[in-house]
Image 1 (tube, rainbow, N blue to C red):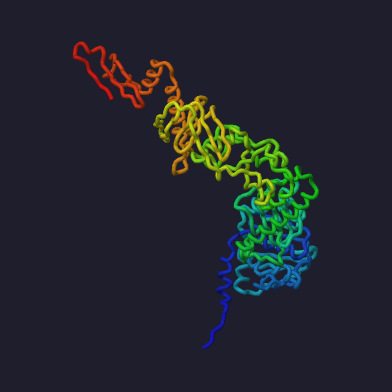
Image 2 (cartoon, rainbow, N blue to C red; image 1 turned 90 degrees about the horizontal axis):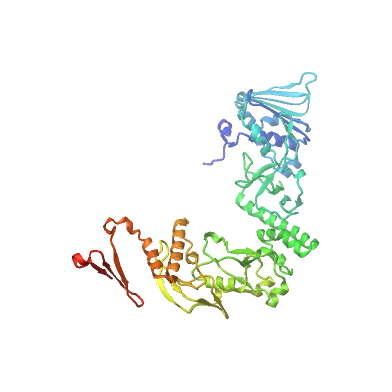
Length: 544
C-alpha cells in the first residue's frame, strides 16, 4: 500500500478564510501588488458607510486576469520572484473580505461575485465601455468592513516606498526610505537616530517590502532607528506578512548590524571631530551600543563619569545617589596621572562601606563610574577600588555609649569628640557628621541631626516599599537622643524625657508631686517618692 499528499480543494478554499489574522491585510496586499506593478502613485478611497474600498495605481496594469483567482501562483516575472519571493495568496484576502470585487486594468474589467468565485464558478472578463479604460489597475471592493481604516492607514503606510493618497490627501510616510538619511548595510538600508547629536535609541522599526515586520512594544515613531530589509535575505510569515520568519534569530542579526553601522558612524566622527567634542556628543552612543574602546586612546574623559561627594552619603534604594554632584568638567589625564585628582570606585552606600564613602567625602576624592569605560582604558590604572581596601573606625574622645530604640533601627550610639577613619593607608578625622559602621553610629560633637540612621538603613521593607514614616521617626528619635545626651541643664533634660511619656493621660497621677533620684555609674537606676502623701500614709516608694 502506498500513500501520498492530497489536497481537498473545497476544504482548502473554505479554511483559507480563517488564515488571515489582520483584516487590514487586504489593503497591504493591494498596495504591494501596485508597487510590484511599478506604480508611482497609489490612491485609496474608502467609504465606511457604504463599505466600499477602492485602490487605484498607475502601474503597468494586469495582463492576465486569471492571476487574480489562481491561489499560490504569484504570476510575477522571474526577477520579481527572485527579489521578493511572492506567495501568490494576496488577492485571496479580497475574495474573503468582500462580497463583490470589481477589477479594471487597461480596457478590460471583471466583476467578481466572491461567493460564486470561491465556489469555483466561471467569471467573465469584459471589455470596458468607451472612455472607461484604466491606466494601471483599479480594484473596487464592496461589502468590506474596515471602520477604522482612516486611523490605521497612516501607520500602515509609514514605510511604504510609493506615494499614497487616502481620500484625497497624501500620507506622510515618515519612515519611507526616500525620506530618511540611510546607509547601506549587510541587511539593507539603515537609518540611525542620533547620528548628528548623539541622541541615540535602541527603538527600531523594521520594514520588509514597505511594511513593518518588527517594532518596539511602544514608541512615538519620532527619533527611532529604521531598517528597510533586503527582501532577498528575509521573508515574512504567511499569510499576513507582518512578522519575520525566525524572528528571534533575525532580531539578533538586525541588532548586530545596527551596532556595526554605529561603529562605522563613530569612527568617521572620531576622525573628524576634536576629542572633547566627539566625547561630549557621542559618549552615550558608545556606552549604549558597546563601543567604549573608541575612547581608549583619547586623553579626555566624559564628565558624567566623575562625581563629587557633595552631600551626606545615605542608603537609597535602586542606586539613586543624591549625595553626589557630577563635576562640570572632567579632570585632565595629567591631573589624574600625577595624583592631583584621585578617582575612587565605590558600591552603593551601605552600613558595610559607609566609612569608605566618608573618607572620599573628607578627602575630596571623585567617585568614578568605572563601568562607563572600556577595561583597557588608560584611566583604569589610576582608579582606587575602595571596596577592596580595608577600613577601620575609631572614636576619638569617647564620651558614652547607649542604644537608640527606633521603629526600624536599633543601633548602638557612640558619642565622641571626633571619628577617626582609616581606609587602606589613608587616615582622616571627621568631626561634622556621623559615621555608620558594623551596626554602630559614631557621633562626633559636630553631628546634631538624625541623618546617620539613613546611613544605617534604606528603610525599605521586603516588599520594596519605602517606609518614610519610620525613617522620619527614627531620624527624630536620634536627634532627640543627641539633644538629651548633650544637655547641660538637669531640669531641662528631665522635662524633655517626661514630655515624650505624656504623663497627663494618666488620671491617677493628676495633681501629684514626686521626688526622683537618679543614681550614678554606667547604668544608674532611679527611685521615685510620692511627696505630697508621705506624711499621711508613710510614703509610697518605687525604684529600679
